[in-house]
Length: 206
Image (tube, rainbow, N blue to C red; front, side):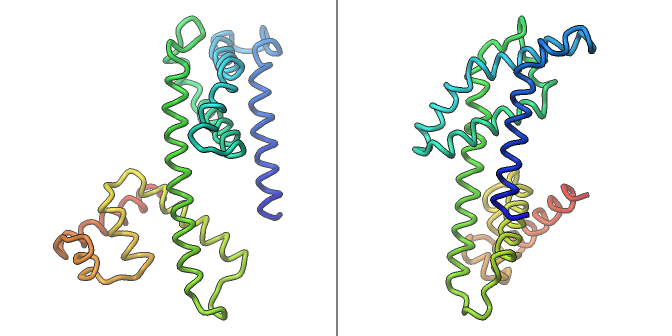
């Protein structure tokens, strides 16, 4: 299945999931655990009352309607993935400050989007410098980009210098001494940074 077709299918599934929750309270009342109903109602209410506002907020930040729509959808998917978190924060089936809560999640997604695009651009710039016979195929490019994004996500919680040292060593193949010069730290510190990066990847992949 091509990348665009996979993406279209994912969007369709996420839309279906959202609309499922919009009607959940009415459709399953009396047919499931009553304690779950207020939580589902809160999520559906959150979507109905604030989705348009959130999309407008994101459009102003991104200057792009398509990206704003995608991230607005992603924001609510994050909430759907952790409904118990909503249940803990709700009061009378509603969040006390729903837009502030949505903004925190959305800002994090915007930051992830910018970091991912920066990573993709760095890869494309490096690719442009490669001789044509060595250039990977379209499928290989997609796999490489996907792998880079997964690595970036794994390293997201590390300090900036640790991430930079790990990526220079693992992706650029630089020697520890050269990385130490670039970051203006000792070679021993670089070894520690790289070890921390490897340890985090191993932990998250376990």
